[in-house]
Image 1 (cartoon, helix red, strand yellow):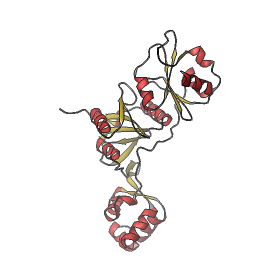
Image 2 (cartoon, one colour):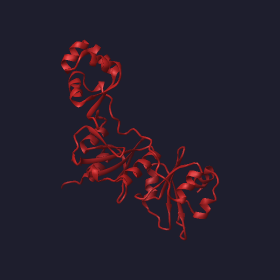
Image 3 (cartoon, helix red, strand yellow):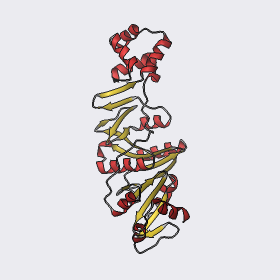
Image 4 (spheres, rainbow, N blue to C red):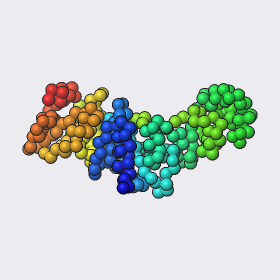
Length: 287
């Protein structure tokens, strides 16, 4: 029985010890965590099918929860190459094989950018490795097919090289002279513009906040290590509780008429009466 790409990614993460939460009709398909590593993953056939709204929402949420946002896809128009990292709207974009290798701690060092396929050389490691193996600068230049001055430049400062040059250097020195691309490294993102009065109130209280449209919650807010997933309305989504548990976040429901059971909840009027972030945090902790 053939597994769907999303199921393959979920199963692989589970086998590697991640706690996995899958979602439907959301800007991301998987929220996964293993100790300090948190991943937001979107699994697609073609990475070009993701739009800016989805990607900005993913990166904004990832920034709030110190996660890495990743697109796993077979192609982006053309087929994605193994062990090459691409970027779509600021998100790491890789094929399934590359993703599985990264989970197995085999990070890639080839990046696709406007200059084509490139790799970043670590100057100090290159020099140390050359001297360790007993090669002269001239002998390395002949093996790589560049001038001795170019090898000297590579050893003097970190440099980007074409994939053809990188492969020649790799055959001589191996992986260690290249800077790996750590797709699990979290990146700061520009927060989405707050378009609702709820998100703007969070900002006024001193939180970072972002509205969301393609997630089970409506607003995500963060202050220091405090994360709050907020639902607005009388219909509570059961997925939010499990999501917040996975990322050590608090839940808040701002209801209109129907107060939910067993969840911190207040009316919109009560929410707007808070004057300090700590008062809201205290309310959530005491619930």
